[in-house]
Image (cartoon, rainbow, N blue to C red; front, side, top):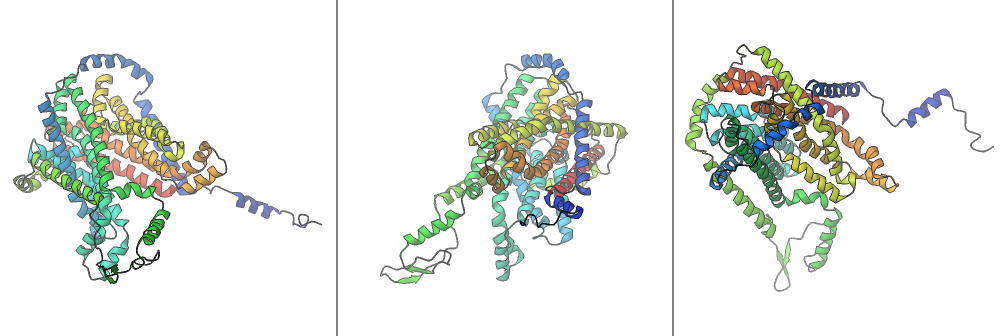
Length: 592
């Protein structure tokens, strides 16, 4: 009798055990089912908003005549004289640069208090995190309205608005970077008797600096687009001239200025990328440098040194040096990196950046007198916005908030499918062709470079006043940001399983659905919810130019000095944003 014949028959219990052993998918739990239901509700809400706003082909066809008429009224473009245009552009750039620098100065102490490993205590951490959330949730237009009460028409209003709102992003990312540092250097300083401030300046900030610089440069690009919106509430620069032209229905001048803003955004993003690669070469090359090259380089260096100073790989360097007589002498340990060409270039860039910030601050009107005046009028200005009120428009505010939510849901749904397709094609580990991935990355970059406010202005003229223009503008804008986030999530997938499947002969399509997508989709879902969060705030701003929603109520309340209504609008939008953000955090935690 063979060994196979000697096996006992499978009982029902053994059969069920074998079936359980073959199970490859975990049973769905209550949290997973609840998260899936929440996502289904969001998707249903997007479809319902899309249908409710009558976003269909017939609407676009009916607007074709308006598009032709708008083109005839827009052309030829009417550019301002070169000196005037350069002056407006420099004024806008000065406000953007100074506001971003202010956000960095304010974000560093807030981030240190918000980080778990550097905070002074649990109450300080809660307060610091609350400040970050509040700065991110309050629209920059509201900060501009409040600053306008203090500084009036000028650059300081824009600097304060951009600086305060940017703390929400810069502070959060910096706090996350502080919590992820290597605690070894800080522990060594503490063991040597260093105080808290010495530990932060000697061990924490040097590790956080690359991330802080990269975040500041990214925020600089965002603030340039936001500065156009601030022109509609009195902040000087090219955005103010654009708002004036739109209010006069001078579309030749308005679209000429919009084109200048668009080209400036493209140029600014390219320059900031070059600066980022120059100042932070270790960030851009770390992922491309194999680990084995470090050991090979050390072995080659040791082989090239004289026997007296050569050392075995992995052993600490000898504190001796070869003298002119052939002997050895104690070598002075190096405590700073050598002044090579790369360090000189980084230092030159740093000096130029600091000089640019100083010149921009002077051009923006930053002065000690202005800051003193702001300190004296802070409490009276705060009193203008408190307590919240409705001025008899509570029902209208709720209806318009509902419209804003519809615009956000429909805009996210419009941009979802194109963004996912572009993100998949822009991921190098999915398409397998660097050229194809770079091409679609460029397409995403071009879409991201178009400010949503400019899209909304054009679509308001083409489709008319109302939420349709806002939803379409947000849909196009979502393609750029969400497409980039999707591509990044796909490229961050662990390459080991992908290589294993490719080694077995699997095709790219099979690898994508079997390995890449299952590992990346929780992050992709979080990115979609984050895009909805961004679109809710953006929809509020687009209402300023007639795209519907609660933003129109916000602007009208500021114009008639009903600042209690402004506070009510902010609180209503804040509640919705926090709800979506909490949902995103919970969903990512469930599916992580």
